[in-house]
Image (cartoon, rainbow, N blue to C red):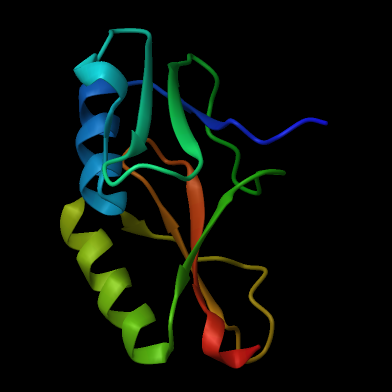
Length: 123
């Protein structure tokens, strides 16, 4: 049986991406290693899915087929996390595909990769 080992994001600036995602998720570089072209981040407390960052020259997709969903406990937690992530360098995305009364907020990391912050209290 297979298990999910890593989610991989393409980045153009490894140092900037490592700084953002370690602060955003409380992750740390595996083995303390940050390389120019490939870095794997792991939960600092152990356990959980790895986030791998690979140097990429591909352009960012406006409507990516794959993205990260980060879960917040409720609307207040979601709002606080969005503000924290923006302060870390995330950008707000003017998302043209929002449904009416969305339970998610679309952001972009420092490399332009889209991700969502979800209010999980809404079911």
